[in-house]
Image (cartoon, rainbow, N blue to C red; front, side, top):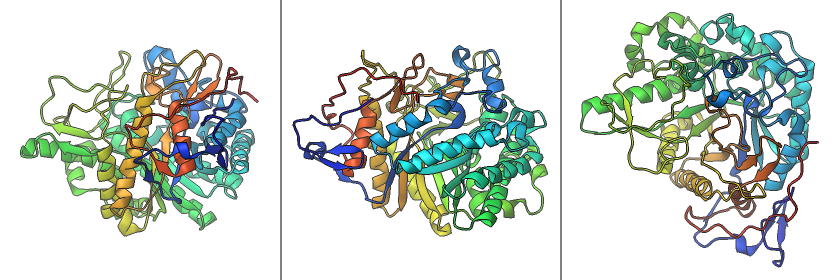
Amino acid sequence: MTAHLTHPRHQPETRGATTVTPQLIVPGSRPVPRDFVLGAATAAYQIEGARHEDGRTDSIWDTFSHTPGAVVDGDTGDVACDHVHRYAADVALMKTLGLQSYRFSTSWPRVCPDGGAVNAAGLDFYERLVDSLLEGGIAPWLTLYHWDLPQALEDRGGWTVRETTDRFVDYALAVHDRLGDRVRTWTTLNEPFCSAFLGYTAGMHAPGRTSPADGLAAAHHLMLAHGKAVRALRDRDPSLELGLTLNFTVADPLDPDDPRDVDGARRIDAQMNRIFLDPIFRGAYPADLLEDVRHLGLEDHIRDGDLAVISTPIDVLGVNYYNGEAIGHEAPASALDDSVNGGRETRSPFPAADDAHRHPRGLPVTDMDWEIQPDGLTRLLVRLQAEYAGPAGVALHVTENGAAFDDVADDRGFVEDRDRTAYVRAHLGAILDAIDQGVPVRGYFYWSLLDNFEWAWGYAKRFGIVRVDYDTQVRTPKASALDLARVIATRQLPPPDADLIALERHTDPPGDTRT
């Protein structure tokens, strides 16, 4: 499948896999630093499929997605994007788009089924994937945990018990034994807030528990697992670039003059951002957080030496940002709604923020009902650099940012997704604004490369810059993918509202990409 980026009558200059002509430079474009890495991201359970192939056993998401009412339309990740069988074509597509790096996760139950012995066949797949990426000139960025805890470990207590932290180290070292000579950047966890609080407190994600105390226990053990894995990997190879990825919000009080709104915003900041940042960068939980949750037993799980392990120095912090929020002490008359429960019992993911409510601000929203607020990303990056990453000498990368929209495909499967294109341009512009303010952001990964299994939303929401026809598994780059390819090739960022350059697509219908 070929995606032509320019009209053939123009004489192109070729850089890598993407065609570049003068017409691709839009008036008003901003230069993108030559050393700024542009890529895309995925996660194992969301794309791989092959549920029980080559020794893989079930994760908590297999169990959760097969639970009636847990996922929209009863969707599961059993097949997803069939990436295990189609990885070679997917890597070829990445190369066509000019992606410089690919952030992916390994599946714990594929590598260490049931959290136990190493499964060579599972590692064989990731070895083939990494080798294909390197052959295509694409730098692999490996995440060890993107929410797919082996169900057997959940049956023994999951992230609420300390044993899981040791099993995570075993798994991390097993992956390193096979891939450590080829992958330089390793992140331990993706979004521990979601693993802990959406999974163990809100009941919205696997494993579906609704306990504030369990969420806090899980959060502590996730960070402890992170610190232990960083130490173990550092002992193996001091040259590795190690870190983790956190998801952030920018919480503003609805009324800055109302102390109740100010306190609500403080609680959200503490229970989503600082609960992870402070132990990792400062070796201590925030005092106000400990006071907020004192009745929920967090301190019962903190043993001598834990915080020293959690604060083991890292090299890179991944920043996931989708939107900020205005917080008021009263519930709004008309609320933003991104929740999904299928009739299941759910609650707020925040363990102690009952009087903190999100209020709409009249901003445009995505199909997830998430407000679009690019300036929040600039503010977040400036804060992280000033208060955490800068003093620690830790590199910042935006490892997730993206938008779901109600895509409409034409008869060839192509999606002219102007809203998503504008979203990406606006958020890349927000990063450039932060760089202009002295924040040395090193890269950006769009979420997601492919439409995929969107957790509790199943296949109802599409974040990809590449459309996936789930019936045929045909991949078709959307207009946003072609626009990102032009940014990579030209190192120029068009304004968000600049017209899309006319795209000419291959006249033949796209074929089956399976290899």
